[in-house]
Amino acid sequence: MLSDANFDETHNPWRVLSSAVHYQNPWISVREDQVLNPAGGPGIYGVVSMKNKAIGIIPVDADGNTWLVGQYRYPLNEYSWEIPMGGGPVELDVLESAQRELREETGLLAARWTRIARLHTSNSVTDEEGFVYLAEELTQGDTEPEETEDLRLWKLPLAEAVAMAMDDRITDGISVAGLLKAERILAARAKG
View 1 (cartoon, rainbow, N blue to C red):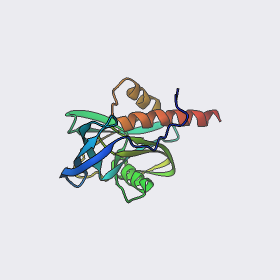
View 2 (cartoon, helix red, strand yellow):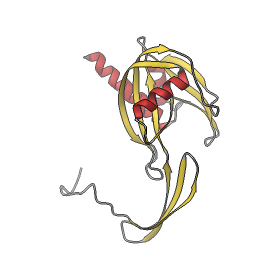
View 3 (cartoon, one colour):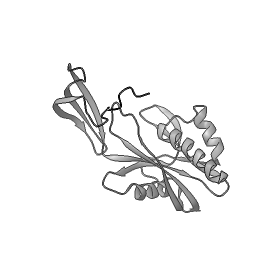
View 4 (cartoon, rainbow, N blue to C red):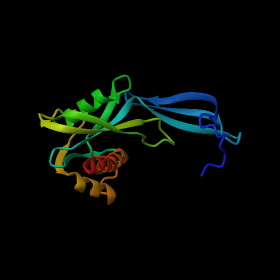
């Protein structure tokens, strides 16, 4: 419960004294800010700024199946099953990026697209913004993976993919959020 009806959500209690980029590459930049924290004390804040938007897609066919993409995730040092996803240039329309990612990773084309989520992936350390789309009315084409991708595709019932998110066999945040939202949206649509 909110205790103050006059609370201003736009007020930033942090004060930046200085900011310096310490590392960058084509995908990220890392900066360190010298700050005064909300209590007025000095401190530092490290921020990873992304140069792309995170794009995830839940393709669902007429029989209620979806596709997962499996790949070894270098930062985690483990294999990961995820929804089809990738990065889209900040200046490009997110739907165009979603359509490209789905085609590259699965070979699928969709006639119906619905944006089902906007989210932040780890908002205490990065400004990464993610979007998830539900892709329907699918046709199969050829995959076009990038050279850094060694992907495995798995077609399975959406309900099974949701079960994998619920029991931690899928741990990617965008995948978990997207699968749960897609399931609720499709269930509500089915009820009419």
